[in-house]
Image (tube, rainbow, N blue to C red; front, side):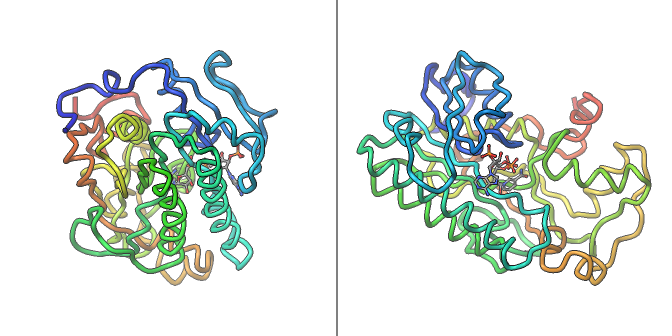
Length: 324
Ligand SMILES: NC(=O)c1ccc[n+]([C@@H]2O[C@H](COP(=O)([O-])OP(=O)(O)OC[C@H]3O[C@@H](n4cnc5c(N)ncnc54)[C@H](OP(=O)(O)O)[C@@H]3O)[C@@H](O)[C@H]2O)c1
């Protein structure tokens, strides 16, 4: 059954109980705003419930977890309709030395492991477990479109995604449907990668990193959230799902559109060796990419609100839809 021409809001039944770990983050905040509009009840698993700025105390309950061990939070999983794991140490803040890489990996594996354990122990598995992953799973690919059937690529991020996904997939043995959300770069103002990419442009120093030919798989945050809601609602969507817009662009094009939106120039590329010297292995984030296309979302009739980068950034920066 496909969901062609049916609004997500009609599919996502009201009053679902949805547990979201890492729901305090960039994607989680927008997702919760979307889900509470549909009257769903949300439990947010966070390491710091006392600091949580609750958008809707009537429907959203912050609950403590440490992201790795079973605690009283696990009772919240029992009887949940959906569980979503968005937790993970940020990848683009600290230089990737051995301990930083370990933290990036462990925070993802441990959080997925704890949730799978909670699901298995409760014996009352949710209908669906959605686990974050990333399009970096595919590594660096210069040419063709990359859909969900493509094998894993090389690099630290690709290996991290594989191990993260394998851990999440263990929930399948409990009967839960498992979906692996392979996010491209999620775009919106006030956070995520875009906030960091804007900085050099704002001070007239922006330009594409490396050759500029590497692909950027991106998605507007609103479409990412709508895609997640579609996956919760549609029992036929399982396994890896690329959460990416249908029109990836090269890094050069991305920087050129961003520069125009900000009314700034996009200078010549910053050479690979400069970035590798400055950032070490972390330069992988900027210097690699792939044209990730979501065959699964397309097959299930998902309609992107912002398929085009100019349109997406136009709405983000100016509130103006450049296409409409
Ligand atoms: N945003 C993107 O463009 C993008 C692209 C590809 C993949 N992803 C993946 O999607 C997930 C959600 O992305 P996001 O942008 O919303 O991330 P985010 O803003 O960095 O939020 C992630 C949440 O994870 C929790 N967290 C951070 N460090 C942790 C640690 N060491 N152990 C356990 N929990 C920790 C935090 O929640 P508390 O502090 O409340 O516990 C944080 O709010 C992440 O796993 C990310 O790797 C995101």
